[in-house]
Image (cartoon, rainbow, N blue to C red):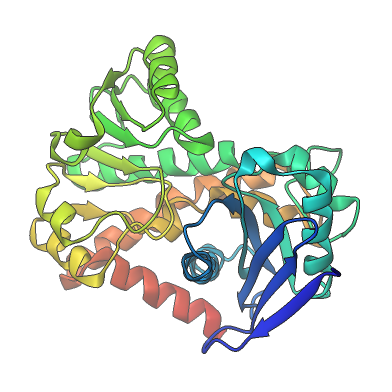
Length: 346
């Protein structure tokens, strides 16, 4: 059976397509949310979703988050995302090549990159069939974006520290990282050198033990994660985990992590605000990766020094946002959304 591409009309999205090749085993979605500021850049997530509907919901949420992220920090790109419904252990060049043909059908309005279940080597395979790919581990490519994402989260945490405690230093602060994937593990390494008291939690015990051995972290069980007292809670796994119950349970002074779409509901954000827990909006604090990848597809081309220096600005963006939110007594995410809308109107 040949590759079949189906377009879905979704309100407020520029384009949403589904790609199916039963012979190869491809079933994917690509969502292009907004290209006002540039081509939609967003990673390819390979995940064994329990249903087609779950995959579609995820790609829509993630694509919108990429628009917010790109607009908030003016990366010069728009928002998009892609998912393949599959176990990442079963990915193959044939699967990735078929996906690349789906990307080609969008004629450059979407540029793919690495995400959960994929890596930079997968991007090289995809590049064999499409030019619309970035985060490449080659000369002129931006490589693995996770280190830039993790570094941006550190800068965001320092903004939280300055706002709450008067100094950007994280020394002797207790930080709990939930999720030790590509970004979460690199975040743990950065925080080790900041002399942080590190607590970690992950469903993969091997990852936990590695971080304990390398960085002297303490472990907390998944069931106790949200109840464990800490200065900063860092969600670094799947999104939409902070619901009303979790928000009511958390015993921290701030939330600052790399996960996308951290708040499951608006009500959860209101509870955090009422509890005076400072929330660093995810689409700003985790923007380091898109800053890095967007430079690769810019007219100027990739430059690691420019990328690093732009990621550092996450500190000032968040600190100013926190100060403004405090001044008018609203949750930080409201100010962040105003910033996004302002940039998209320009």
